[in-house]
Image (cartoon, rainbow, N blue to C red; front, top):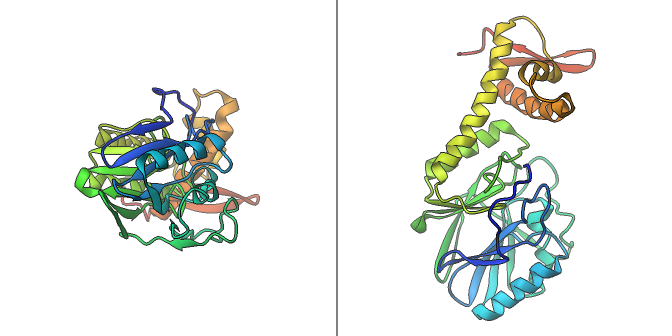
Length: 297
């Protein structure tokens, strides 16, 4: 994700009678103004979505003051994915709440499900797709949305039309991903939910989410079409990522081509999974070509 300065986000914002946003106070190129965390519910026991980075004193103090003001504690911490700016603050939050508070996260499938920022003595319970958490005033459902990471989830409050998008959809800019094939499928799952509002993991509220989701999908489809068009027009020829970058990004400064090649590689891997192209080896490096007999295009 690229840094973008949208409207200033206060540290504490009451978004509705059921949802309060607490900014993680960890701004940066990858976190925008900071990680958005969310306190759900109206009663004495509530749900917290994400915890920000570790050892952020301003965040911990702000959350402590909020819980005191709300005369509440946290019963469940729900983590959208394993990245440090979402799970890193778990220990700091647990210092503020009752011992029975549970931490939940969907398991990773690409690596050992370990979060280095979380001490070994803190148990993390496994989230399941479609799992529902209820507290007074709020009910939230887990939806597994891999792509940004293999363990990524979004959360819905269906009766309110609210979706907490984690890093799958951002308030500003576009998101990064580990697996484009899975990411595109997850975007279409979210599109099917048709949320009325999105509360993202970074950036401001998305008030008109369906066009935003469609923009994400269209943006990636357009880039994929450019890549596939080059390969179709050069049937029988093998291309490296950089070969394709030099054609597709010819108007982009060459110092940005390396980053462009990273994105192109993700598109190529997706096109292989879709059966439109084939990968082979040349001089111990991967090359790609159009799969004429396999493609339905």
